[in-house]
Image (cartoon, rainbow, N blue to C red; front, side, top):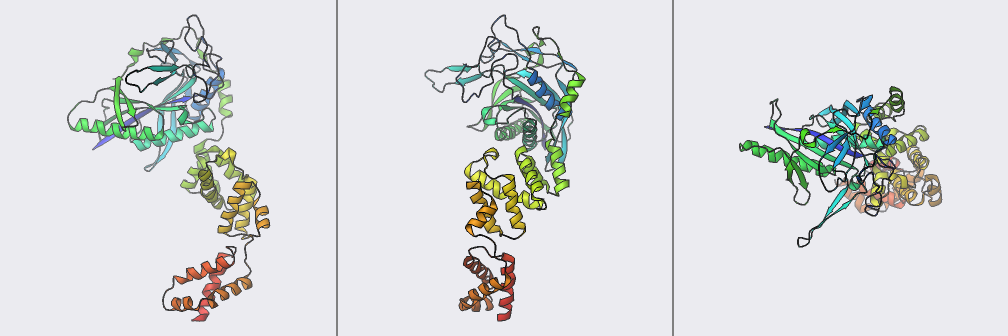
Length: 483
């Protein structure tokens, strides 16, 4: 029996307006013309001097402090030397031996319970350019776009504390959520702003020593992260079982074939020939500035999750879904606060159920939603006060979703108020039973499922506006009297 030993390196583009060491704008690679946001500094021209982006440092500190890291009063930028077509200077300005922060924790919740994953370091660096390779075998070529070269990157390196591909995915999802709460990264993985590199080895359960590891590079989705790790874990396990060595190397993930493929021998620290960047002074972070940033941090997802469970008595499942998006959590809380008495569990069910369902069906994001928290709260209040029933409430929400009108206005204009008058509903139940003597006879012959059919007929007569509980009680009463 083997277990996986996994450590993740997460590369998060910092959501600043300009690049890490120059004034070039950060542009959307899917929209901007190639090589349109490039200057002598980020293209590596001789004689140019880098200048540190203060906002990028601030955002890096936000992440480090949110992860409970020890921030360094002085950190050092270094040159990481390697040669690749998308690296215009022939080296990357990064941090290594003296990073921005060390020794943090990220708590994750798995099927085995909650556990803490240690964070080895958080450091700043610059991104590389982007290569595009042709598929033409007769005329192969590669194109380089330097728009991304020099974009601020935050690298978050975990200790090898993860033990499965599923755990690695959960870690990635929770970290992405944290970065979005802190507003330092959009989390838009389709645009490559968040990428994973996984170091993985396997060993027999109970063995303490680490075995040879491989690194899977540039995993740009949670699905690729999980599937790449699953494949690599199985590949290494089979090699060990066959008595063959695992070669330490860098692997790529082939999405089409769903396999890892060797790319090159794994580099070590000496291969990069790190040395302090001579054109940048040490980065000094005062205790006052760090404390100011700490005090500005928002309520973090884990804290919000615990509060939602305690304050609103929500299940882990409901709290997890609501907290996953800061905007959704804010929407839910505003609904509950406005409603003045609406059950938070009811609000959670309708936000994550009916509202999410409509949004997914149409492809609308929360910032495009026409249903305000005030109007949504009004709908739930009408439901709790039994002014409308659940089927009608779903109909009304769909109309609110389309028009942006309040629930009250829609119910009034469409005449959708719930019928709860017992005498009126008793008359309708009697009308249904008297009009269907054959079905009544079959019911008393033992086909008791017809009770649901009678219920449906009453709801049809009332166009779905009858109070369901009153109808059920009256049906039971009248059927009992007909025995």
